[in-house]
Every structure is written in structure tokens, then in C-alpha cells.
Image 1: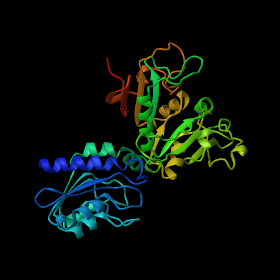
Image 2 (image 1 turned 180 degrees about the vertical axis):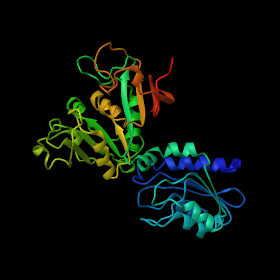
Image 3 (image 1 turned 120 degrees about the vertical axis):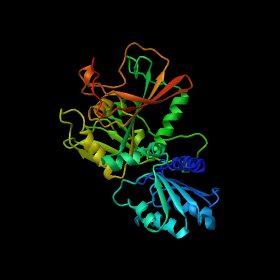
Length: 375
């Protein structure tokens, strides 16, 4: 797009901040923020998409702006939708409000909602796209991944010692990471549609997988679906904390597993086993979750499940919490990922590092289609 005015750049950055407030509440819809400037370039209204089925960001911003929207500019993080679902088309709302210009960050790739920019242009509204597109796309990475790849976005989180151990040789692991890191994990859970653990974690830790965020009441916190990958239907028993009813739970078992004892305890999904015979077929698991409107997954499973996801090339982001601790023995952070030589290594691009108490948090994304370096 043409060089944007500083006031529009600032307004779009504000819209991106607003969009983030919807994380964990809008799925299967995207997070969207909108700022409306009046004809003099002053902020007239702001809004964000707060929950699925509720008004979109543009509607909230236009309501706040009122008549000041006429002749003004709307800055939106995602191309305004052009279809009628549970709410009306935002493109038409902008036309009815009399805005003169619409600037959006990311084009809408979903086949049902796309076309808003064209509708606006045909109504005589000046339209430009691409302002702060990378920043806006990063904030909507889960939804965009689900649309473009037809499966949920997967964030793998782990906590390890500086020498890469997730537990001691005797199996003890509480607590490797600091209270600050553990609080940050609850933030990740709150933003996800589902949290996944494997049978090993279910047996060893009996996790509850709840969300606790200081300063927020239970009503203000989203409750992601708790998913236990229990291929043989042997890890989850009656009385398990993951069955406490505080959030929905799904048990994924193999098609041939005897899961009669789970009937009535939690919903079950039966899936094919992986080709090598161990564990479940990861793409089938993700497809089953996508069909349940899960658009983002926080993978908290142990080394075996993490290795299976990596082997399936089904990890979109990694967040590692490294504690300044050395063990020298014990399970590594990741198990067999099907990588047998350094040339096959999955290379990562480190996008952020941060200190959380004594720990170091590293955020990285896989480099797709990477090739070994030539010497």
C-alpha cells in the first residue's frame, strides 16, 4: 500500500492491541480490532470482537463513533467481512456509517467472508490493505493457520533444565520452572481452544489443566477443552482431576482400544493409530479437533507426544521455559521425532527471548522447507 500517515499507523497499532483482548473468546472466529478516526484524524471510536456470535469489531467502533464516523477512516486488523452469519456484514455497516476510507491490515482468506474490500470500493469508499500486515497476522496466527491449513494452530510448550531435562532420573519434575513461568503458562492456556497432554503426563502428574490468572475472576477466564491422548485407554481413570467438570474434556483413544470404563466419564473420540503402530495418527487427531471448532492448541504433553507432533510436522510455534538448573540425567524435552541425522534437523527461528524470574523463555517458529547448509 501507499505510505500511510503517522496517525493511521498509530491507529492500526492500537487496533492490533484491541484485537488481542479477544484471544481465547472468539473461536472459531478471528480476533479483530478496529479504530475509527473522524474526518479530522481524531479517534472517534474503538472496538474489538469480544466473543463468537457477538458484534464484530467494526460494529463496536462505529457505535462508539456515532455521527463522527461519517467522512472518517476505519482502521481494521482484518479485511471487513462480506457475509451474513450470526451477525451482518461489516462491509455494509461501514458503508451505512458513511466512512470515506477503510484501511485493513490482512486480507480475509476465508471463502465465506472475503470480498469486503471489493464491496467497499464499489460503494465509492477508498480502500487500502496491508498496513502493519505482519503484526496483525502474528496476532491472528491461530485463526489464519486454521483457515489456510485446515487444522488447528499448534503451540508446543515445555519447561526444562538448562541441559534439556524435563524431569530427574527418578521421575520427579515439580518444580523445574519458576512461579513466574508457571503463571505465564496459564496465560497460554487461556488463549488456546484446547490443551493436549499424553498418557504419560496423565499417569505421572494427574493434571487438572485449569486456568488461573491473578486478578481475573472465573467468569473472566476462558476454559479450553482438555484433551488427553490415551491411545490404549489405560491412563485416565475415574476420579482423575481432568474429569473434575470445571472445563470440557475429550479423551482420544485408538479405534481398537477397550474404552468401556470411560463411558459416562467424558466424551471419547476414536482415531487410527500412527503408521508405526505407537500412539495415534496426529493429523487425524487435529482433524477431529478442527471439526469441533478448535482453532488453536496448546501442546503440553511429555517427550513422547511432543516427538510425535514434531515428526508429523504439526508444530507451528515453540515456547520453551529454560530454568538455570542442571540434572545430568532424566528424560529429554522431546522424544523420537523421526530425525536420524543432523541434515534432517528441524531448524527454528527465534522470535523472542524474555526473562521470567530466574528462567529464560524462548519463543521460536519452525523454518518451513529448510534445507541443510552446504559446506
